[in-house]
Length: 210
Image (tube, rainbow, N blue to C red; front, side, top):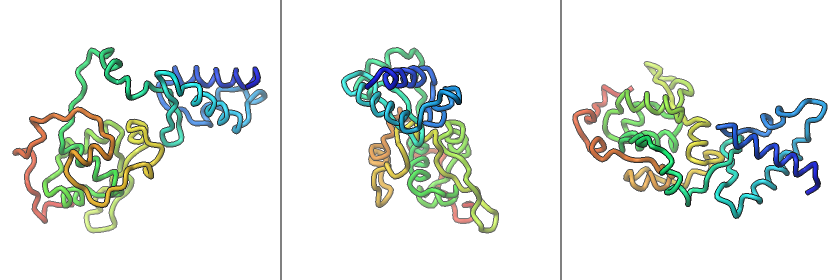
């Protein structure tokens, strides 16, 4: 690489390190004044060069949806986790099942999720998924009552290191939560105490589904 290309790569690396979120090529281009803005192909070449530079390092360049970010490699997660003094948020198996169903069957209504799971989906689960920005309402079903349709977000792709939904593993049928979690790469702590069927989760009657 010439000096100009090396400097562009260094600028992009610095931006990705401090951004705190994935940056698209357009966002990277916006860092430069219009009269000295590099070509789009030059930015993409710099990203490829940065990716190659990271091959033997503890960090890697990852693409999530249209954005790029620098992150620690998964093999070093055991050490990185010790930096955090906060107890990780724990999620119920019911929440992971609901997220998996939305990811694979989207757009899907709450009633359709309940049909698949065979139990009611609590309002708190939907609120949590919306609050984490893993799920959003993408429309309504054109049936009586117009129930909300849910789909995954860019935040979902970013969190689970997916460039797009086409990177989800093939899943011909939704199975037990261990299989779902493994195939979705949901490396999230599961709260065993609230994951078992309880009063909060009851079978849902046909007339209760929407």
